[in-house]
Structures are given as C-alpha cells and as structure tokens.
Length: 187
Image (cartoon, rainbow, N blue to C red; front, side, top):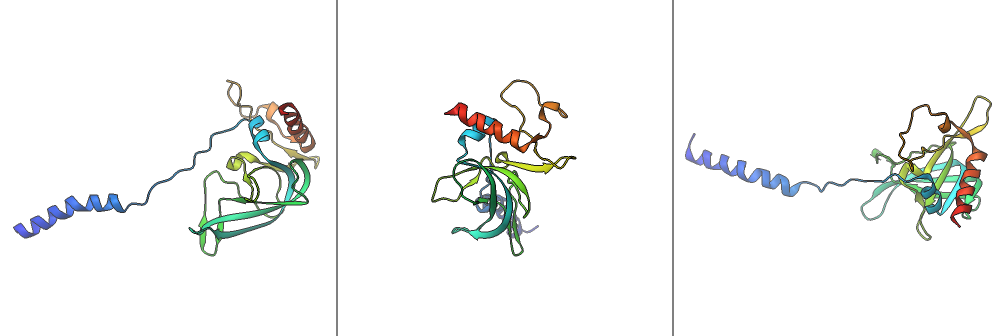
C-alpha cells in the first residue's frame, strides 16, 4: 500500500466516527410514570363516558408533527362541563403515506365506546391523561351490558394477579359511581 493511500485510510478511520457522531439525530424518549386510579381521577380536568364519532389526523405546528383529533359524543359527564361533545388530541396518526406511532399512545376508531380522562386548560386542546392510562374501553358482556375493566390497584405492595376476580369487568354505572366517590373524597 502506498503512503498516500495509507494516509487517506487513516484519515477516514479517524474522522469518520467523529462525523457520524456529530451528524446523528438526538435521541428522545417518552417516559410516563404509572399513576394510581385516584390520581388519574383527581388530576383529570374532564372525565366523560362517550362514543367516538370522528378521528382525523393532521400535521401540526412548525415541525409538522402528526397528531390525531378525536371527537367523542358525551353520553355521561363525570367531571367538568364538556357540553354535548369533546375533542381532544393524541400523539399519533396517519397523514397520506406518513404515519406516526408513539408507543403507549391510545388509538381510536369511529364507534368506539370509551371513558376518557382528559387534562389540559383552555385555550389548549385537551389530551388524554398519561397516554393510555386515561382511556378505559367499554365493551359488552354476554348479557349485553356495558362493562369496563377496572384498573389494577397499585397502591399496595401486593402483586397484580392475572385472572384476579376483583379485577373483572364492572358495569359502567358502577365504574362511574367509583369515580364520583373518589371525587367526593378529594373535595
């Protein structure tokens, strides 16, 4: 190998890692600490049981970040005064061929029945508390009743047990009573 080629090789080996490190995009992460159910209830500004009627995605802000805007028709308001419908944003969605996926962010579809716990103060559009922590899906049991699976009780030191009968689906009206009880105790 000629001295000229050896010098170029040393230059590439020495400079290339530096160039790669300097040109790399900064890494970022989202960390959401789990909140107990009482905290979710008390810190949410709006809590509603409703049905999703519209989901649309758009690139917003100067960086053109894709977000979805979800509109829910209110079946029952548990906290706050949202009116007949409430629109909130979630950090995911698809615009054209571009899709944004944020791990832990809930996804919604028209027709979904949910209980959502929202945070944010006007004029800002509300967001879901703690990403998925503030979304409870409503399903129908064998009898056709609307039920919600309650959150795990994390305040104690015990383990969460799969199939625990205490965590079985509960009727939406019982879930709403539990939310109201927590709100009354926090006043």
